[in-house]
Image 1 (cartoon, helix red, strand yellow):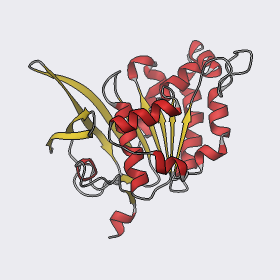
Image 2: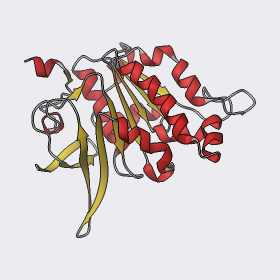
Image 3: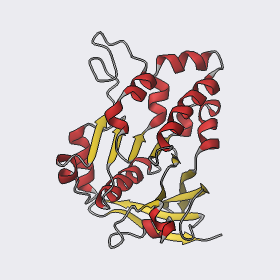
Image 4: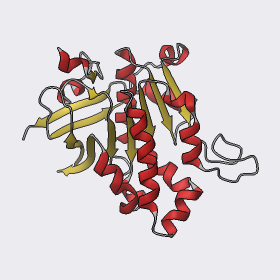
Length: 250
């Protein structure tokens, strides 16, 4: 089907129902924004995307601001997502954004570099078909130039420059997935990304009795395949990974 070829399947149909809940995959040539507070499941969802996409034959970059390579492998193993072979075959490129002194995103003397510029100049990172950045707000917050613009109330202009770069990337059919903690960055900074996202997921934690349940609120889904639920309940289980709990369709 022509419609299906325009989607990147996130696979694992015999493991969970996430691909079916999202209508068959993520549209090619799209910007995907996954927004949620700490603990809402942003990292688990991006890890699930990365593993499923690679399993379906896509090439993927995952940039993490939190996990080292060892931490990433251990985390994926705990979710029953075996990423060793994809990493060794270079179908999955994992990068750790180290903001500490001597790290890849800081100078030897500990001075922070212009992270966004450095990010956009990292050509190898943008070569795969899908690029996931978890969490994008950490890069915004640690970029000294962006920080200075925020102090001048010019963060919106800075955001538009980054968005222009992302648009150039997706014009070639690639997908850019950004996870963001809205409580960690100003609304003026994140607003433009919400506006231009082709796919916008808002992750939420809901109290049901004594339980805390997670859900994906689908705020926007341009270029969807089959019917996509407006709310998708899920949990993250050790030894299993993402588990779809419920679905309600508008």
